Length: 323
Image (cartoon, rainbow, N blue to C red; front, side):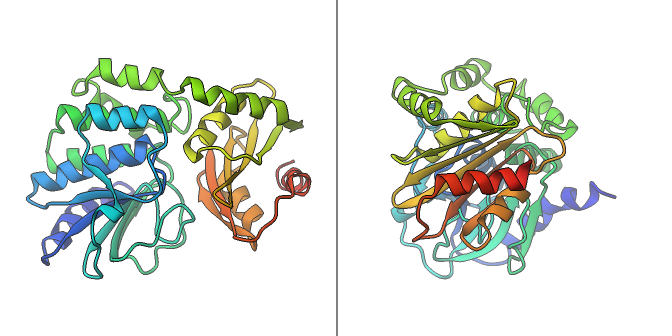
């Protein structure tokens, strides 16, 4: 019974989209990562194959050179939402994020669907939702849609989904399930392995090394918990990469990174303790001072305007929540 409803979702989505005329946009979370872009691209191609035209949009910016290279090499048609004049009648499908989350801009238009692999409690007013927190990536979900519809993704879409799956599971080491393995088996013979491997290997650049230096200079550790505040800021997608780097240390099992970005404080958590949940800890920590969410292995958030930096207090609070 578990698999029955997800298998129907792609049919429900397509049937609903065909009910009315008008523009349809696929929105990623803000400052999109490879999984968000890949899932949006895959969904666009699938819907195109069903005669449903869509455009991919995002808020924030494309920060990582590897992601920009992925978009360029695979000809992914993604634009900042300001590229379009959005109107209230536009329909929006949110992919790899959820309406009401801290990292999803509330754009003009009507959010009609959410497709995500992060836990969420903010979808009550969204007509169609497919949320599978047990999946390692949103790219995995889109792969299943292709299989459900009997459609073979193009080499470009398969390559993007391959990259998205690999990146969000930290090269198949984080949150990997049999569903993700099935998606990899489906994508592997279809994708451009040379391009995929090149994008995955070349994930950092020389300019990132200064952030590594600052992180290592200011890192605090307590009983398997690593904490760092970067007052000079850090690109949001790089925060996750830095967190994964620190988590690779044998003595570290939970990483909490904070950075001042554009007068707002961004949060990124990483976890490999079996009995801890990064999303739950993020929500407890940010209650009353911000918003955040994610899933067991990783979570992100943002503190409210006006919250003043207090790294010592943050670290003590996190110790109480985690240890």
